[in-house]
Structures are given as structure tokens and as C-alpha cells.
Length: 395
Length: 98
Image (tube, rainbow over all chains, first blue to last red; front, side, top):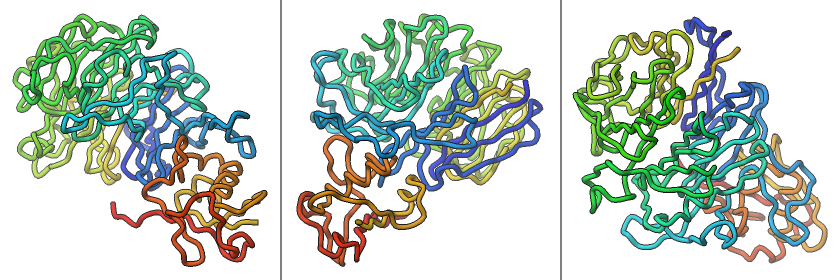
């Protein structure tokens, strides 16, 4: 193992933090795509030089960027300059930044509305890509979770994107509603033991699973209880903030919901609460130790509207027994006057020994622990608000 | 030769430092200029107008010769000074903080 690379998406660009396997001295490169929102960057598990990035702007829309050299250079995979922009029939050609919902009768049920905040029908409108999940086996295959919620896949390295429309069309789509942050598909988990199984989560519709590579889907929200919706145990409508899995146990899932930390031992068929002694069970991130599948991490956040740590103390909470009993991890983290948030995609773990844990804050700090959470130190302190953190091991 | 002035972020995407120029065959309209721009700089597709509807993105406007062309029909002729290259077509992003 020669080192680690931490990919950081922020409100004003991307940053790449690298270190050797000791993880003591860090090199910071960036900002890449300065001034743009970088909702997410992630590397291919089978080619650490292949990175995908979601670059977006309220002015100019969505861009997909790709690097084939570990983030040194980037390009938009798509039609080369001078090539036609339309087919001979006049249809726009697919592009790297083109996400068009599939409403065709052939590949999915035509579906043109979801519910708006007030319950009225609202058309599906593409806004941005929240999450990119590269395939576990093919560097050119990557999934994109988008707002308004849908799942897209590219099998040509991000040049073109096709919707897996069975998700929106499976039946409950017209009942989905946005959360305050928009109706986003923010979590994509590929099952390492079953290439046909994918888990996704949507705010605020809930969690869903496919067992046939994305053709058909079903909600997996049994056991969730959300007091803020008319039917607290409804099939859909739950504001799932994030889901995490340890690759060695793909049937065990951990969820940070709007309120409640939850666990499933049957691939999402049922959930039970594991919030235990947390000071608040609201939060956004959740992750699992790379080598200890019963060791979990969350960052409790005060809510409904404060969205900062309780008592101004930034504390990661760790459970070593799969939930319910949690210990506060504070060494190296600010324990007074801290009022930052940690957003849903802003925590990651590496698989070195011992496991590294990383998270970024809306205050622009990226903290790292080289000892599974026992102690923490900032890699950088003054980035723009951090939207996402991912880590790669470099061989 | 049509001159087009892009906002900073689109110049960065297109990897250009200054105004760009495009050639248009036939009538010089907004649609024809944007079509030519997107052929030469495909990385700009979807950033100025929607991929599918072709509508101007809401935070962008088009100006030329001190005229606001944002709400003109896209097939209307652009001013002669733009068609001749004397004046650029300006693509302007909304001013906003944050």
C-alpha cells in the first residue's frame, strides 16, 4: 500500500488530498473546477486512476467530469468538437452532461409527475447529480443518483447516460415527495456478492432495492417509523439520509434516517432502531469500519432546524457492537463553540490497518483519524463548505 | 464570423481565454449561433440552453448592441452588427452572491 487519496467535493470546487500510508503528511491540490458546486467525486474500485466528478451550477447546469490519471487532468467525456449535435433525424445526441428521464412505454411506465411539497402533482425536473457510484468490476460503468430522484447508468465511461426507469416506474413514484433539500437520490450501494442487487435511497421517499440489475425495484422501508409523515409506517415517504454497508456482509445495512439510526440484517427487508444512547438520533452521515463490520460511526446533529452538533461539541459516535451502545470520540475535535454540519456524503473510511475515518464539515474542515476514530486531526481547515468525502487506497 | 462573449465559467469549460468566434451558414439567428457554438465547443452543450427543450437556462441572458435579446424568438435575425462581427453576442450570467 503506497498511500491514500481523499476526494473532497465542496460548494466552490473539488480538492484532492493525498498522503502515504502513514497518513501524517498531506498534500492538497485544488480547487479543481473552481467556483462550481462539486456534489460528489468517486474513484473506480478497479482502477484508482479513473475518477468521476459531478460538477454543477445554478447558472449552467450539470457537468460530468472524468479523470483517467488520478485527478491530475480532467475532461468531459462526450462528443468531440466538430461532430454533429443531432442524429440525422434531428434528435439531440446523448452527451456526458445529458440526463433525460425515460418515459417511454417500451422501457418503463410513462411517469411524468411526483408530489410537490403541498401534495399536488409536479413534473419530474432534472436538477443535478448528487452521487456517482462506479461499478465494482468495470471502470467504464458508473451509476448516477440525481435530483429529481432517478437512477442513471453509463456504460461508456460517462459519455452517455440511460435511466434505469424501473425505479421511478415501479408504482410508488407518483407518491414521492421532496425533502427540504430537494428530491434527491443520494445513496447507491452495489452488492459485492450479487451483481444484480443494488440498494438506493431517496429523500424523502425511502430505501429501495433491485435484485435484477435495475429492471424492477421495490421499497424496503418496513420497520421505519417517521412521525413527521401522515402515516408514520408508510411504505414510502421516509426521509432516509444515508445508508452504509460493510463489503464483507452485504446483507447488513445501517441507516441514518432524518431521525433514528436503523439497522437491517436481511438486506433491507426489515429494519430496527439502534439509536440507543446517542445524544440525538438526527444526523446525516453513517459509515462502517472497513475491517470490523459491527463498528459504526455517526455524527449526531441537533434538529429540527439547527443542524449543528449538540452543545457546540463536534463528536463522532462509535458503536463497536452494531449499534445501541455508543461512545463519543472527541480527541482532536473541537469541543466548544462548534456549529458546523456534516452532510450525508461527507464521511468515508479507508481499508488500511488501522482503519482510517474521514469526514468534512460545512465549515470547510476535513478531519481524519488514523486509528479508527480514537484520535482526530484536521487535514485542512479552511475549504469551502464540504459536500462530500470519499477515499481511495493507492497501490 | 460571429463573435460570442461567454461568462467566465463557460470560458473555463471551453478552455478559452477571450471571446470565441463561430461561422454561421445562412441567416444569423440566436439559434444558429448557439448551434454553431455547441458544435465547436461541445462541452458547452446543456450549459446555455436545455438539452431537450432548447430553452435558455433561467439565470442566463443574451445581449447585443445594448439590446436585451433574451426574450426574442430564437429564429429572429440578430442585429446586423453581430452578423458582421462588429459587435459580439453577449451571454451574461445573473449577478448573485454566494
